[in-house]
Image 1 (cartoon, rainbow, N blue to C red):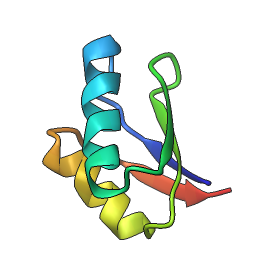
Image 2: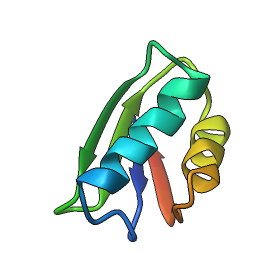
Image 3: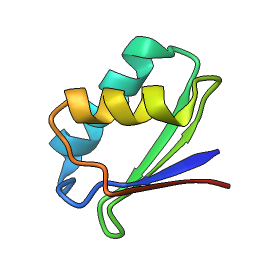
Length: 68
């Protein structure tokens, strides 16, 4: 499981956009977004860089990432 801090994620549209971007590169990924903490948790076979790039390409800034 990887966690990403996405400070500009603030609503349901944001979470849907991020989830769609991640699932476009890994359809089997499990994505959980929390707008309160601005955290995105992803369980995926892809590496951190690929997931970070997917979020950035969707238009969001990623300020921190960690593996749990």
